[in-house]
Length: 448
Image (cartoon, rainbow, N blue to C red; front, side, top):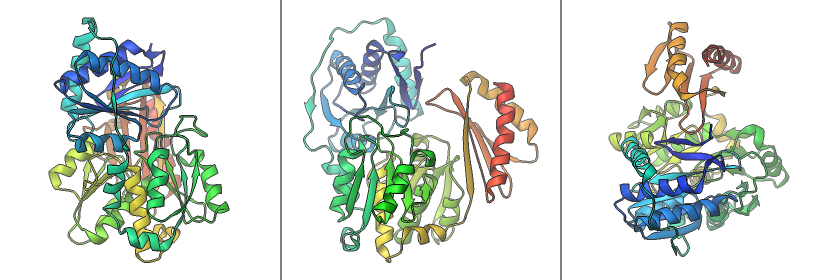
């Protein structure tokens, strides 16, 4: 079976094993039809296979008569912002996000510069199927390069923080771009904020120096570099720079979950209001929201589009996911590591505090994340087994299965981007969280 995974979240696969030029071109043609043949912005994350994918995409878009604006190597949030700024009909980011280097994929944006919602995603998938036996009339195309594609994004991010206050701190920062697209805008943004920046993996060529997902086990080099350079903070981006993990000045991995918590604490200090996170995110953000009168906490289903839809519904001042993806509507409706970095630096500059002390003021929870290979068709059976096994829990369905108790929770859901089931548990005690996660995993494995 090919590795290709197509869902409303986009397309991913291994090049040559499910991700072939014909299919990539057909995806692009389908996007063009959903966008009624208008202008499309494209960009890529720097992987070696990105050039091949780009050519296939250009062929598909040309076949449908689209005008193409090419941002070159740029981050996912930059692509989304450009769609809106340039009044394009759609956008297409060539990326496999945090998947290994041999993977690549496509992520579509609507005219508002947001990832496709469920309705548009379903329309796109249906169009891909309809085009299977309809050959393209054009086999190649050209694109107009976008001059300084990161300029508008940089200015938008600078506009949400106190730039002069941050500059006055002269903060030392280690940025681990890991040879992803964050290397294009990240160092420039930090230098604009007056930071003394040390960059790891600063060439956006996709030659990842470590596994691309910014998890603790992959970021030992960043933790060490923070200590060696006496840095105030370390930042780690995933390859398309929509996620951010953080290391404090002691070389301690703060992680992805607390990225959203730190951003929430900073934003609500100046602008109380609704905050949205998905159902797989830590409780710590909810606890922080409770500290600010006039603010409210809301959960959405997992998925960037679901978070943004809930943000629109409640007029949220901030949203995001526990994978380090912060969404600030003042910049755009996309998870954005640059927004996360700027808000953390703004918080550090606001009262001269250091990152470790800031984090230590938060409630302490231990979150455990595991995954197990699982065909999508087996997920409902796993959910049914778990409902019967944990009858004392409060059950929330619709996004896999979430089980809540007074002091802990666990969620089980099928991934939209990998053939796996994700199991996430959280409790104030690490051992309790691990035991809960393993108990659920044991039952899932019995089913799959």
